[in-house]
Image (tube, rainbow, N blue to C red; front, side, top):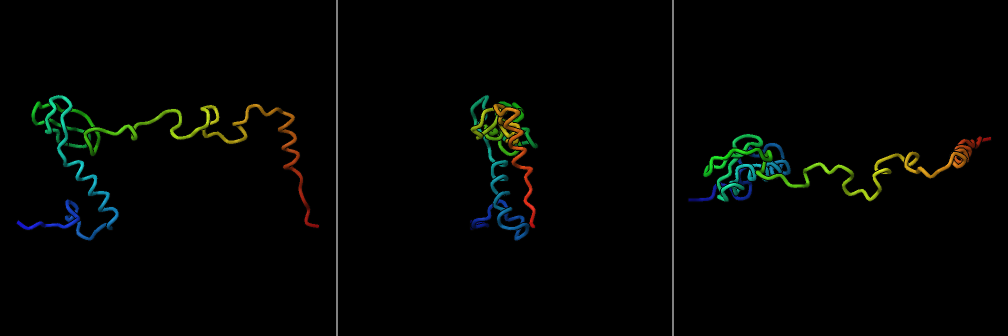
Length: 123
């Protein structure tokens, strides 16, 4: 039997619609959602997707909640409270520079304000 598609695979149903980049992204998602995964309860490769986030094992008949497209979600998708890549301390994380420097005294702030208020007139 001859191969039906050379490189488009499951997204051949879309034809030339939607653009190549979007079809490549959809291909990756559709392949992962239609794949069979290993069941974490019985160890067999029978875990299939029933609906968004619902996975069912055909062997042990367990139904579990999982990811939308894959059975297991990666730890990258989980929220990481407290930063994620930023090397600043938590007290300075994502704060404006005027609020971040706590050691600045009132007199230093006044000096900065005076420097900023000087106007240069064009004449």
